[in-house]
Every structure is written in structure tokens, then in C-alpha cells.
Amino acid sequence: MADLEQFRVETRKWLLAYAPAGVRGLMLALGEGNWGGRKATYPNPHLKRWLEVMAEQGWTAPEWPSQYGGGGLSKEEAKVLRQEMAALKLPEPLSGFGLTMIGPTLLEYGAEEQKREHLPKIVRGEIRWCQGYSEPGSGSDLASLQTRAVLQGDYYVINGQKIWTSYANLSDWMFMLVRTDPNAKKQEGITFILMDMASPGVEARPIKLISGSSPFCETFLTDVMVPAKNVVFKVNQGWTVAKALLNHERIMIASAFGSGAGKRRTIRDWAHEYVDFAGDRVADASLRQRMAQYEMDNLAFKLTTDRARDAAKAGRPPGPESSMFKIYGTELNQHRQELLLSIAGPQSLGWEGPGFDERELTLTRDWLRSRGNSIEGGTSEIQLNIIAKRVLGLPD
Ligand SMILES: Cc1cc2nc3c(=O)[nH]c(=O)nc-3n(C[C@H](O)[C@H](O)[C@H](O)COP(=O)(O)OP(=O)(O)OC[C@H]3O[C@@H](n4cnc5c(N)ncnc54)[C@H](O)[C@@H]3O)c2cc1C
Figure 1 (cartoon, protein in one colour):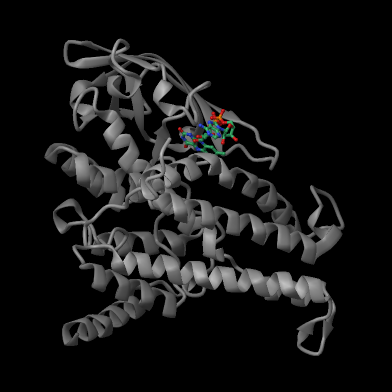
Figure 2 (cartoon, rainbow, N blue to C red):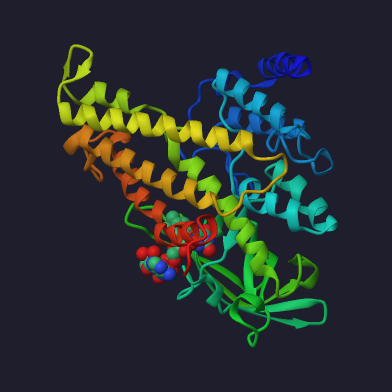
């Protein structure tokens, strides 16, 4: 404990010395932080500097081993770092699928050479990753995927199509699932492989959504040559790796969307601006009740995720219970967005033009974006199936 207190004092001193003043108190909305990669732009120079100093220290991935560029911190030290960053109102220095999905998966299943090649670049925000799982016709039934990889010498030649590939057009590498044995039982003919998006034959076409943005793409693969050494774990055993990565993804989605994390303004801030108050209480009793319910659910969810994180044995990856966090966290975010619509009323229904300010227009788009929360990373129905079978052990 004394060592931990010493670590806390030193961490605070370091953060005060090295965090640029321009990032203190900067609350970033989802998607606004540093996502890294070769195509990254950094409109805020303070955020760029923040990434550089934190990466140098390995604190963009505090718990990863230092030989791969990580901070080499224990679980307890990493928690102290998070607490001190929160106390100083410092944002996450780096986000993305590298840190939250493929990095932890490589630590568990990657070959030594793969860890040495890819992990330090993730820590430094040099390479941005995307996820090539879903295909037209293979979403919930992911194991039916058809993208074909055929071994020719030292390379796999890959042909097929991925869909809903988030930010494929901005990413440098893709981790993906391909079919290497079309005759085996469907889960047994799949391989997990890493592909450079700059390879000839890769084309990412953005898809426009109802929210107006194009966060994901159709990705077409035509005779793409991928070195066989990029296979993670074993050929035809990619389903094991795929499931492990999905557990990391579901935890990431739950914590990114649940608990109102990273939101600039609280529900109460919004209410103060848009609804009548009777003294210090919201005048409308039914709205007040919904707000109180949300605040309680939100706090309970945050405490539960904190407790689960503390209880997890160091280095033990998340299991199928991640489905419970995913379903609850994403439903909570959908309740939050609907509550905000009730608070802001007609001001939350703008699309463009005068009469709506920038925050109100963002509110509309965030609400529309939240509809995807119960689909991405596996739909809520699929999470319920996993909880029933693999957590509760109920019969098929
Ligand atoms: C915002 C967002 C980002 C995404 N990003 C990525 C990405 O980066 N990479 C990637 O590979 N994919 C991504 N996806 C795709 C996502 O993984 C799929 O959309 C999801 O797995 C569902 O597949 P589907 O769309 O084909 O729907 P379907 O599988 O066709 O499902 C349609 C409906 O049927 C229900 N259903 C299907 N099977 C069952 C069953 N057995 N029991 C009960 N109900 C069932 C589903 O719950 C759903 O309501 C993203 C999706 C979204 C919304």
C-alpha cells in the first residue's frame, strides 16, 4: 500500500508536469479523441502532444508489458493512474480498436513476432485498425462467413466482401476472419488473419447512415495477397480467437456507451437549460422520476463495472459474462438519448438550418447513432442467447 501511495504521488507529479494545459478539463465526445493511424489529423495540437507524452511513457496502454511498448503497470497501479487522470480531468490520450480489441487479443494468442511488430505501433498511435468480421448474409450467424483464403506458397490469396467495417477507409490494418477450409464444419474452417489495408485489391467504400455520417464501409477484397505469417494462432482455429476478441469488444462497447462516459454535459445540465424547475427540482414529476431512475441505473452500472474490473484476476481475459455488460451498457445509453430528447423537446429534432445550435444538432445525430448500439458487437438477441447458454448454462 505504501508503494501504491508513493506511485500515486509520483503519477500526479508526472501528470501535472507533462499533460499540456490545453487538455485539462477537455471532455471529449465519442469519436472526438485521438484515433491514431497514418491518416490521422490532429486539429487540436495539445491533444497530439498529449498522445506523444503518454505513448512515450507507455501509458496509452498502461497494463501492457513494457517490452511491447506498454506501461508495464500492475492492475492496481493502472487504476491509480486512471483515478489521477480523472481527478485532473484529463482525457484518454488514444482510442481505437488497436488498444481495445486486437492488442489484448494478440497478447493472448499472437506469436512473439506478431506482438513485437504490432503492439508498439498501437501504443504509439501509429497504426489504426479495423475489424473485418461481418459479411452480407453473415452477421449474427458469423460462422457462416464466405470470404475465401487460399494458400499459394507463402501467401494467402483472399477474395470476398466484408460489410459494416467501421472506419475501414481511415484504417491502416484490418484483423479479419476468412474461410480456409470450405469442407469443414463451419466454425472449424475459419482462420483469423491480419491484413495491411494498403495491399493491392483492397477497396473500402463508405456507407451513409440515417445519422448523416459514414462511419462504416463495404470492403471488397479481390485477389489480395496476405503473408501466411499473418495468421494469428492456428489455421482453421480462428473461431477461438474471434470469440476472445468479441469479449474484449463487448466490454469496450459497454464502457464506451454506458455510464454516460466522456459526455460533456450531464442530464441535469441539459435539464437546467430546457425544462422548468420548481425550486431545485424539475417541475414535471414524470420527467423527474425518469431522470432519477437513469441517474441510479447509471451509478449502479458504473459501480458494477468497476467492481468486475477489480475482481478480475490480473491478466485474465473477459469471458461470456461480457455479454451482460454489453446489453446493459448499450440499453442504458439508448435510455439516456431518449431522455435527452424528452428534455430538449422540439429542439432535439433538428437536422440543419437556423433555429438549432450545434449541440442540439449533435443531440439528434447521437440519438440516431444510439440505435446501432444494440446491433454492433452482436445484437441484443444474440447477447441474450449467449447469457442463457454460456453464463446460465440453460439448455438449447
Ligand atoms: C454501428 C455499427 C458498427 C459496426 N461495426 C462493425 C465492424 O467494424 N466490423 C464488422 O465486422 N461488423 C460491424 N458491424 C456489424 C455487426 O456486427 C452486425 O450488424 C451484427 O452482428 C448483426 O448482424 P446483421 O446486421 O447481419 O443482422 P442479422 O444477423 O441479419 O440479424 C437481424 C435480426 O435478427 C435477429 N437474430 C438473428 N439471429 C438470431 C438468433 N439466433 N436468435 C435471435 N435473434 C436473432 C438479430 O438479433 C436481429 O434483430 C457493425 C454494426 C453496427 C450497427
